[in-house]
Length: 340
Image 1 (tube, one colour):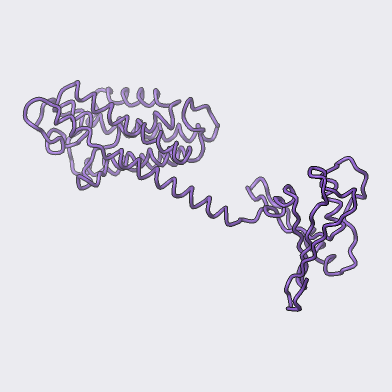
Image 2 (image 1 turned 135 degrees about the horizontal axis):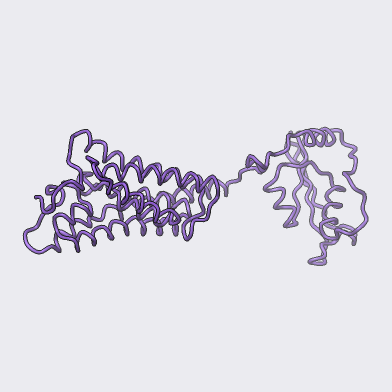
């Protein structure tokens, strides 16, 4: 059915096939469409399996007899039929076939499947990006929850701002110094919980990658909360919550390394040394877990996202620790308790 326009495809719908070419699942003639033009010959057919292959795979050049044999072969694999394509009287079809056979094979090891991206692939990528952004936003909001300020409201006596008293750090160590052991431990649990819950929600929203993204965002929110002009804590406890969810196999080792280094006698800055050594060990271990594919308890399967997320968290923590070191601010563990 053509209208005479150059390069306009002509469609010939053939329905009345011989009985041996029936679609035996529905016991009715198979439906084939042959689409041809001056430039190329394409074929579409109403058979689910072949339709999916044509939609996702590279373009193949067929003629009607080839299609009939292929469709019959899919329905009855044990039938006796000649192998190989039927020769075509059209030299254009033969040239297209030769070009198709000479195409480079897809490199499956490099992730090249030879499939053509379709509109739904772009939609899926956009939705995945949207989910990751949502996980990041939720993680940041959870990280900004001011647990030390809540503790200051619960403390008996005069209201104390942890950002202007003690080490001027709204974290668990300073909260313990200002408000006592019980509230200090409560702040630590709350800060760890922020990182852990953020990773859990991120994983629910955007899978394993969402857990990593939300964990890093929670640390950023704790260190740089927008509601307090980006004056936040150091992110150590919140990063441990991230580790506890995304890298639980290493979490006990992380605690042991940090406590051991902090108790080494003679250190001028035990808190800073503890954070530096434990962060470096955490990052190195995450790389090893990824490279060796080691088990990770309830956490996500170790992939390249694990060391990348941990490296991002270490950079956020370093962005808070280095200015304090440069300005000569006192170490958290060397300040006396109750210092206002």
